[in-house]
Length: 243
Image 1 (tube, rainbow, N blue to C red):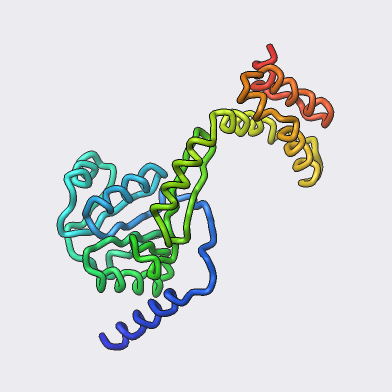
Image 2 (cartoon, helix red, strand yellow):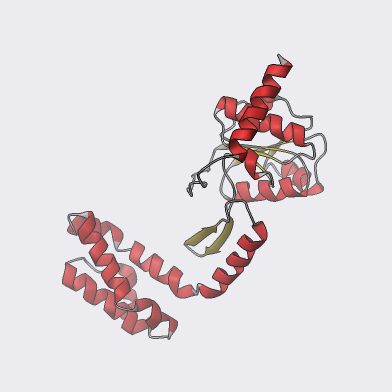
């Protein structure tokens, strides 16, 4: 039996090493979902912190854990199991992250997750991953995920830093104000094509550049003009800027 399990695990690892297609980018709602993190070191602590930030219910499985993880447990932020990994630790998990210091254990976790159809990430071992975690840029309501397909985390971090410098506060402001128009645009404009033309037309009026140059009133007047032409009511946010 053990030989059969090992054989299946090795075949799955070989399949992933030789995979033909890149990872499909996707945003997941993990609020209230169970995320099991196997390993108790500093890397796992960072992963736990990120998952908690997005609302996940985190359980850390490891014989020993960092002081930070133990502090979060005392504060009731996450749960822990002080033990070596067993397949039963995956029960009820929606996502699994593995980062033990034993490659064979990481391989077993990956195989067990695939058998149970649980998405798994094995930190720094891309061939074992069903999903990979991007570098994340957040500017208010704007969020950008940067990935190099697991080939170069260092380059992903550099791209993240470059984009952070390039994306000014005007992007968040435009995103937020356009969001205040969406419900009325859906009500007034009958098709996706009409709504796309409306919102694309607002951007094409150069409002990002206007905000970047401090021309706030001009930017909001351009938005108001587009709304008037399309029959979309002005939102309170636009009215407030125009006085």
